[in-house]
Image 1: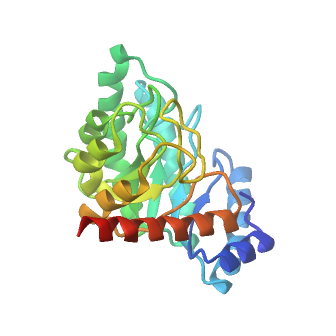
Image 2: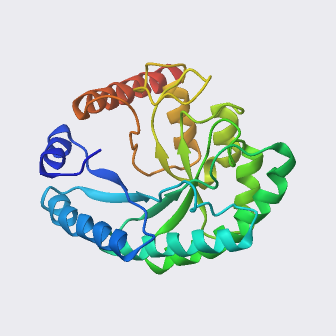
Length: 258
């Protein structure tokens, strides 16, 4: 999503109050200046329209994999993530969202890579705290790191302050009920989208197989009180209308439970 004046006004008119900001890579001084210029342009636009940067999504890809088995490559990734967090200070995000790894992981390598990732997360959660933000690892699809509750609970265990970004269309191995029951207490932000449970699809809620009233009820039960961030297809207006429907469906769900 291009964050310009037209986009920000459309967001405001659709009734949105929180956004997640996508940030670019910062490997060079040139890339740093480009990111800082983008932030300097966006901050007043958002503030003038009463839109809060709830979270920043850390980029992912080759060279920025904090779970890499090689310590030297992890070190480079950690350094870049640290630069990104520092660059985002003016945005004042409450959360930094990141993928725990990059690409599919074989079962043979998974244990070693989980341990490597955890070492990186222990460092980065402290960096995020320096900017009054919380680090949140995103649950992932396919054979990626973080694709099961087992992976997520291993990464979370013993790292004070680490949270979870719950992407509703990433669960391919566990049910939503199981994930919320076991990982739900750690969920501090979320990406909202629907799918067919075959692969991630990023459809509008209601276009796939997710039982939204049950999912929302589960999140309420475990105490989630963050925004309902959309990461799906559809215009801002379509998403706003879908959110109204989700709330109405949940209200009806609660009435039927009485």
